Length: 70
Image (cartoon, rainbow, N blue to C red; front, side, top):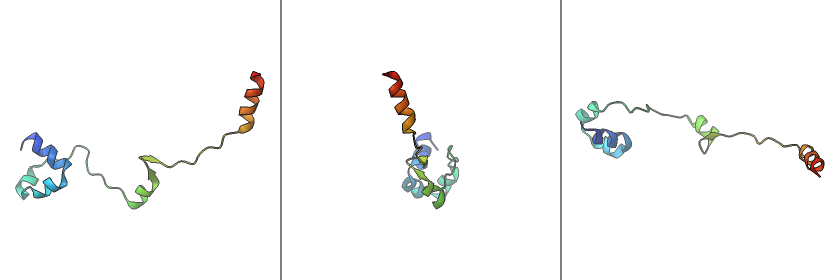
Protein backbone atom coordinates (compact mmCIF):
# COMPACT_ATOMS: atom_id res chain seq x y z
CA UNK A 1 0.00 0.00 0.00
CA UNK A 2 1.50 3.36 -1.00
CA UNK A 3 1.96 6.29 1.38
CA UNK A 4 -0.73 8.46 -0.26
CA UNK A 5 -3.35 5.76 0.28
CA UNK A 6 -2.34 5.34 3.92
CA UNK A 7 -2.43 9.08 4.61
CA UNK A 8 -5.79 9.51 2.86
CA UNK A 9 -7.22 6.59 4.84
CA UNK A 10 -6.01 8.18 8.09
CA UNK A 11 -7.54 11.57 7.25
CA UNK A 12 -10.74 10.60 5.41
CA UNK A 13 -13.07 8.28 7.31
CA UNK A 14 -15.38 7.84 4.28
CA UNK A 15 -12.43 6.72 2.15
CA UNK A 16 -11.23 4.40 4.91
CA UNK A 17 -14.68 2.79 5.25
CA UNK A 18 -14.76 2.10 1.50
CA UNK A 19 -11.52 0.11 1.60
CA UNK A 20 -11.84 -3.67 1.55
CA UNK A 21 -11.30 -5.61 4.78
CA UNK A 22 -7.94 -6.79 3.44
CA UNK A 23 -6.84 -3.21 2.66
CA UNK A 24 -7.93 -1.98 6.09
CA UNK A 25 -5.95 -4.80 7.70
CA UNK A 26 -2.82 -3.51 5.92
CA UNK A 27 -3.20 0.03 7.27
CA UNK A 28 -0.64 0.88 9.95
CA UNK A 29 -1.83 2.52 13.14
CA UNK A 30 -2.15 6.31 12.97
CA UNK A 31 1.00 7.89 14.45
CA UNK A 32 -1.04 10.18 16.72
CA UNK A 33 -2.91 7.21 18.13
CA UNK A 34 -6.58 6.99 18.95
CA UNK A 35 -8.04 10.09 20.53
CA UNK A 36 -11.32 9.88 22.39
CA UNK A 37 -12.56 12.44 24.88
CA UNK A 38 -15.40 11.92 27.30
CA UNK A 39 -18.30 14.37 27.39
CA UNK A 40 -16.96 15.64 30.73
CA UNK A 41 -13.53 16.35 29.23
CA UNK A 42 -15.10 18.16 26.29
CA UNK A 43 -17.19 20.30 28.63
CA UNK A 44 -14.04 21.47 30.44
CA UNK A 45 -12.25 22.87 27.41
CA UNK A 46 -12.90 26.01 25.41
CA UNK A 47 -10.91 26.80 22.29
CA UNK A 48 -8.34 24.16 23.11
CA UNK A 49 -7.57 25.50 26.57
CA UNK A 50 -8.97 24.74 29.95
CA UNK A 51 -11.20 27.47 31.27
CA UNK A 52 -9.60 29.55 33.97
CA UNK A 53 -11.10 32.02 36.35
CA UNK A 54 -10.00 35.57 35.67
CA UNK A 55 -7.68 37.01 38.27
CA UNK A 56 -8.83 40.19 39.90
CA UNK A 57 -6.26 42.95 39.69
CA UNK A 58 -5.76 45.39 42.51
CA UNK A 59 -6.67 48.96 41.55
CA UNK A 60 -4.80 50.47 44.49
CA UNK A 61 -1.55 49.05 43.20
CA UNK A 62 -1.89 50.67 39.79
CA UNK A 63 -2.99 54.00 41.34
CA UNK A 64 0.03 54.15 43.62
CA UNK A 65 2.34 53.61 40.66
CA UNK A 66 0.77 56.40 38.63
CA UNK A 67 0.97 58.81 41.57
CA UNK A 68 4.64 58.10 42.21
CA UNK A 69 5.52 58.89 38.59
CA UNK A 70 4.06 62.40 38.71
